[in-house]
Image (cartoon, rainbow, N blue to C red; front, side):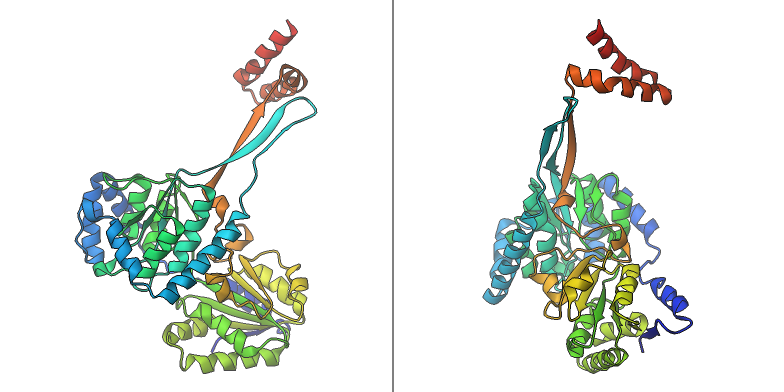
Length: 433
């Protein structure tokens, strides 16, 4: 049975704190293994990547076959059913339209002292997207990672997608083509992250790496950060639903299971002021778990990490949600817009019971790569901004330097940075000479 908490219970705070502190991340001792793989790829390049691919993916490659050829891409795309291709195309269109609106504007102005100031935005030159491989891979993740990069203007966009025993999901290949990916490398694991970060004889290094992966991929992303940018270190999926008695308990149950079926370590939480509604949702979940295809995974997630929390009112529910800072937050209430104003920490908010989180995973438009493990307290989901850099601009006129230069000189002296002060003083002396 899942955890069942009530904010009026005397031990609620301790129980809720324990719920927040549950360690769900998959963290085997992989760091030393990953460090060795990265060092090997840096030393041996293509040969190391090929050796690890043979060892872990049971696939023999050569430098010439590390990437899919245009003919192979065309053949895989041709395998996709027309209905699936149409759905993927619709998703790509909606994701692109949403992310185009995120593009920031350059700015330039002259302040009262006569200084010209501003900033400009420019894309990273190259980005690498990691895509988990095999038939269980997710084409939606390709769209969510690649489209913002292309909208931002990334010049070279590549994918690392392992193909265990040569198996690839044709939808992933089609998604890459729809998103404008330039090359698909058929490699995975820490060796792929290392190759993208440092480059090999065949694989060009990139400036940023994004995309989900297992514990080895996550550890590799941690290790190469600084050499390249990364999006985030994502943990197991999570959803929190705030619902009142106006919601359909069966719909809420399915929404919670939609995240529980991802991973045994995923977490689904229901927060409601209606205890009877909470019990009805639990009954619906148990019913669906009897027939769900991924019931073993979803059942373990619900049993170990699921919870129903009964609150005094919706405002208290919102306050608890802010403490959780969930990746996905559904507001299935009579007035979700009003309740949303009380939410300060959430990766994505889905308003009203007609907006299941699953729409956000595929065709809603906003990105589904979101902060997990309470990191929505300080970070955001993937966006165009992840593939852009802001460069500041400043231009002083003689009059502007005369106006603000003396203050800069004083501050340099206060910090005992003599050359700083002298670089300003030399110009002021010229002006005053």
